[in-house]
Length: 211
Image (cartoon, rainbow, N blue to C red; front, top):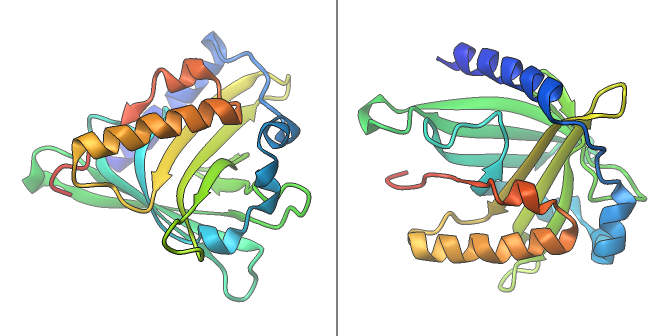
């Protein structure tokens, strides 16, 4: 099943590139002008488990999979390099058929001018992964408790071929109402950060029931 998912993903990305992804990506300066605090991003506070609440990403399947989370860790021998384990459960239903799948990704977190720029390699591709929003934990200043990742990829002609958005939190919330409220707050944060509204209108909600 997992091999089928990756095959489908590659074919879909190709189709998207051909049909309608023809706009340029926002620049890092675009994000920094809107949110100057991004210059203070600290990768050490970003480490740990992140639960995905919502996403815009053709590589993920909102109906087939769920309980998606990331384990983001800086290397102990070189803190400018990080590993990012993408973990999801497919199929989400029925429960007795569930199986964990992990995709190991890695990247760098050493851009001094744009510390919030953390490019990543995964799914056999490199993505310009960017943290366009983060919030410091009100109870623990040693970590962030919310974050929005944004990925954008263009081809050799400068045309956009991929857009990805991930709403991340340190908890996935037991209440659907509470989770929805947090997602709505993060949509506002994403708009203020410069994320395109047309993609935010197509966000998929991650399933967390019985995870």
